[in-house]
Structure formats: C-alpha cells, structure tokens
Image 1 (cartoon, rainbow, N blue to C red):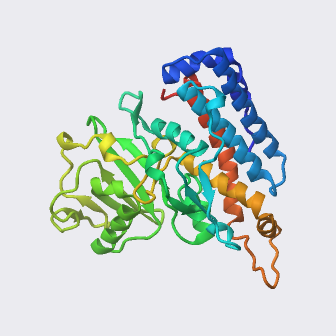
Image 2: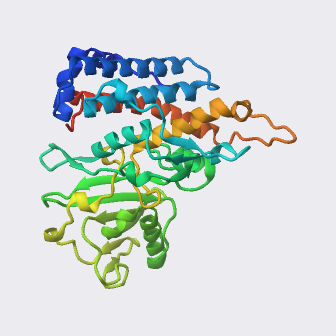
Image 3: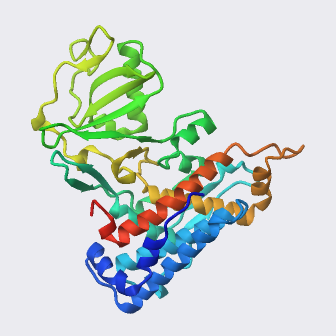
Length: 380
C-alpha cells in the first residue's frame, strides 16, 4: 500500500482547529463537544487505516472498511452538527452473495437506512465538476449524485462496483477482457467561447470508415448516456487509437454522420461540416451527468442512478470486509492461489482488489481532508 501523509488528518483531530473549518465548509460551527465527537471518529478512522498498512492481505479489507466507517461518521457529524449518539448502528447494506460464489460475484443490496445512507447523502451533495476557465481561474459546478432514497433496493456485484471505480479501468480491462464502466475524460474549455466545452475520449478500436466510426460513437453513448446530449465534432486516429471529440451542443435533428454533416479529408480524419454555434452551448450542469474525481472521470449509471465514487468505495470495502469475516475460507483460498479438486482457482480478481485497496487508502483520506479543511481544497 502507498504511504499516506497523515499530518493533515491529525491537524483536524484538534477540535479548535476543526470548528472554524467546518463552519467554512457547511455554514455552521459545531459546539466543542460535537467537534470532539468528530475528532474521535477521525482518530478511529486514521488508526484503522494506519494499522492496515502493515497488516497482511488476509485481514486488511476489514480494517480499511472500519477506517472508512470512522471517516464517514466524521463527515456526517460535521455536515449536520450532530453528536455521535445520534449515529445509526446498522450499516444500511446487506450481503446477498450466494454460497460458494466467486469473489467477483459477491453481491450486496442497499437497504432503507444506516451509516451508508448518511454517508452517501453527504458525499452526493458535494459531487462536482471542476475546471480552469480561460483566465486560469478555478471553477466548480455542483453535480449532485444519487441520493440514498433513490438507491433503496439496488443490488449490485463486486464486479459491477469495481468496474465504476475511477483509476481502476486499466486493471479491470486486463482482468475481465472488457472495458470498465468508467473512463478518463479529456475535458477542456473552448478558447474565447464562453460556456463552450469539449470532451475527448480514446477508443482502442480503429475506425475504418464512416459507419464503423458511427458504431464506436454509439457504443460510447450507450456506456455514458450524457454523450447523447453532446454533438460529435471530430474523429481521427493517433497512436493506434480512435480519438473522438464532442462539444456541449445538442446533436442536430439530421444525421450527424451523413456525408453533408460529417466531412472526411485525405487522412481519413472526420470533422463536422459546421462549427457549433457558441450561442447554443448547453450549460455544464445540464450537459454533464454527475462525474467522479472532480470531473476527470465519467461513470456509467446503475439502474439509471449515478452513484458517488466514494459511495462505491464504501460498498466495495463492505463486500470485501464481509468476505473476510464470513467467508474466510474463500478469501484465503484466493490469496493462496491454490487449486483443489472441488474448489477451482478464484484468484482472477486478486490484483484488481489489491489495486482497489491501494487507491482507497489514498483517495479516502484525501477526500476527508478536502471536505473538512476547505483551505486544502483548491476549488473550494
């Protein structure tokens, strides 16, 4: 696991340091007693994560899950200025995994209420899209992800969860031989055109002609539905990949890929016949679906709902901690990479899980610091 610099969390473990920062973020200063409760949760979360660094993989997911629960409680208490006595004791998630299922097919259901629901509602409202404008100023647009109420009853597998975690897409592709449900977005503003944005994505399949290019674009729009509201403006090949560019203008009523709408040059590069009209740019909050990592990653919806990346982390650790607690024989079998007559190998997902744990150990503490200390959040 990568080393994490914990001094920024330790700074927040002082109630006197914490109180004005919580007010700065949420508009209300907690009392000293509530600030101490928040700090206690931060201490517990940090200690679990620190212990996980030197723990063997056999028990590490369990420690990290309780570390995330501690951090989640701290965020809830800070957001609502509540004492720790008001926190629920239930997780709000239920392990629905079949007996003897493979690790990738571990499954959970989101219930009515618990720690997860409170955590999700805090991080959902903080979801945002961040960018630098033409004046090199930091800008943010609020893009709330799904509320807990809209997620009740949703069921999903560990594989479905991990396919949507940003920065896991390369390892996911190697593991399962298919594209993940998250992707890096090359987002940029259009020079000297206020409100104009372009999104660039790269596809491993090389288009051959107009129709194969259309098929690639359709596939991207199926994975990431927000692109249906963006006009396709160019396609070219570079470094063995197809590069696609979209602009935040609604697609025309006519066929985007017709010979009159999309021109092709001698290099087999395709370009829209007309540049988008800057007067009809779609506002960012309407053009984008909720994104992850402050707008750098698109994530496919789950049953029509866009789930916060941090809620995906929470649910992923919940399933892995349940595996450690209640199916130790399955987990140890996977880690040992063994094969026996009545138990085939189940180590396919092991490197993916280890990569997820590495990402979680850095992303979650950083998120907690940026939320509870706006001075450490360059977009605040």
